[in-house]
Length: 116
Length: 112
Image (cartoon, rainbow over all chains, first blue to last red):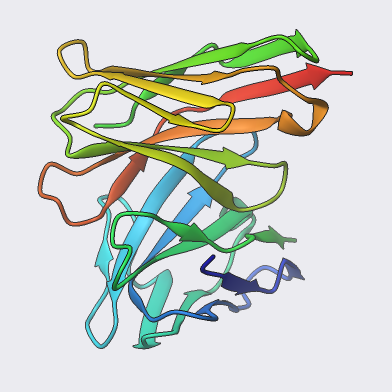
């Protein structure tokens, strides 16, 4: 099956620093990638949708300047949490759809961000 | 919001028993999917059911969809300890842009 690799799996950073999370589709071309945020024992909250070569579409209430998304190629999307603060601490997950499958989502393993 | 709600929020059963979890959603859909998430991990796709389908099977999984009630159920038969995980339903946007909204999830614990 299609594999999505997400790195890092865990990151601890100081308040005010920026953190970059990578999401790669390893064996397929990802038409669209999605970024989610998940709080403990809660559902996934869609943050943004990114298509290769175009600007990401952010969900209402998600700060574009805070969460920078770059979908530079059909296999790579990155999420940068800029000037991170403790309230940004969360589990971030990416997912992707491929050209063929379309509807099925393939998920990365998630990144646990802790901001001190 | 379109987010679905699932019930129960948590379910604890003995190995070998069946587990049923339900999902309700608010707007019309093209399809509904069920995903599984092990603690601290990403989600894994289980099954997709289209709006014109009423029931679908995959191994020990059985999914039903009632579009008139805007609800779906996931049945796991003969559960195993390895089925312990959170289960989420996901519905697509009416605009059909492959944007999926996830339900609140059911945390299933299967006791050996």
